[in-house]
Image (tube, rainbow, N blue to C red):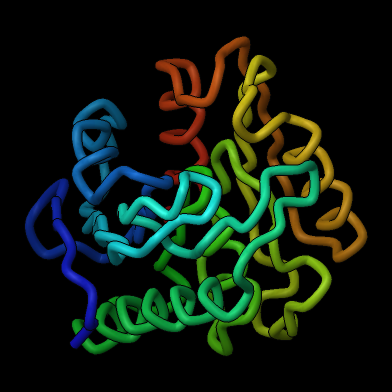
Length: 217
């Protein structure tokens, strides 16, 4: 059983696929829960929204808040606590194992994450030893690009990257950087940009719905 608490929403009884969706810094599992009906999925999918633990965040003056890892300095390379991001990745791995134990094939499981949550999703998905269905990286960056041990099972994992062109929290250049790194690995990538700040919009929700149906059909 996962150590972290979470919220679950099912689009229909007896789901055959799962989406594990991680929120950003200072938010919680409720953050993206309202989006599920807007996706209008014709599939039975279980959405799981874990809550990050409460920890001190250095760049916010040491304030304790929901966070997947500490951010030590805000610069273009994002100085982070790598040990904490790996620990969070392992905690999310427990949700994947839970879904497999509930009868969901690993290749019907998608990881998704916004901002900080996306960085953990990158680490988890590309290091996980069993093949997954895909990863959604929303307004985020590949924080562990230089240290991750890529799993052969997920080297060509389908990727959805969505980023706002007016994002002043995680600049779009970091989404583009992740895209460039992934292009060298060879997975199929769908890159979308939107004229929005650090958030998501209705157009992005529609693109996510199409992509999810493509990966989980």
